[in-house]
Image 1 (cartoon, rainbow, N blue to C red):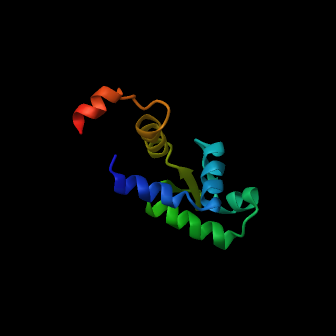
Image 2 (tube, rainbow, N blue to C red; image 1 turned 90 degrees about the vertical axis):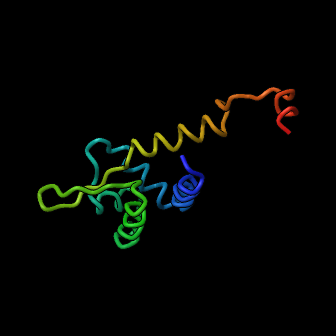
Length: 107
């Protein structure tokens, strides 16, 4: 995963409301939720939720489908899983440790 994409995704999730929206959509997975349902659950105005959903969709972190003339939103679980799996293995405790001797010989 490219550093540019990681920065975009993490930057998108640096806004509390967006994290709340993604969490709300993950809780509803795989059924998704309508925008007004999301707004009610996270106690944020419909206009604000709509704006944040548009931003998240622009980065493909959220998708939308029409169901019975209503827009239903879904978290992109595959992308989120890929992002956090990558972060965990590259920067987290799962990161392969390089011995100091190897690091010194690379220098």
